[in-house]
Image (cartoon, rainbow, N blue to C red; front, side):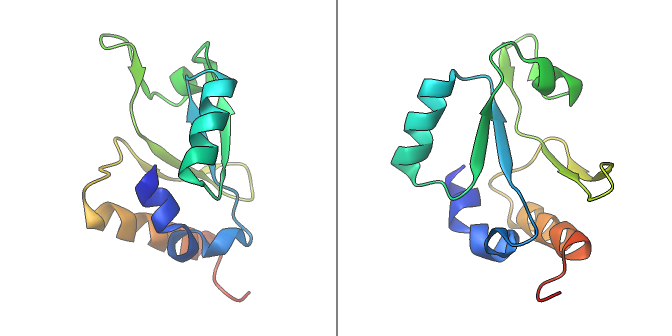
Length: 109
């Protein structure tokens, strides 16, 4: 998540016209403390039952953890972009994410 934080202004237009929500199976108190410590500029949602995580196909049943997936929901409520899994160490993954955000929420408009 540090990479999302560090590239937040560029990728997500400083949050203008874009809402970023990280969904985690961690407890809300754990997630809140972690987000504060890391100074995350976006929101988090706690999903300890895995309901949302499973609906988006991110739950790894064998390992009992959530994979990092990126899902962008457009203003029409439909999924507009997905990366499954999101490759956090690959710059091209961030480039594709930024392009998808730009297409849905162009800068300065």
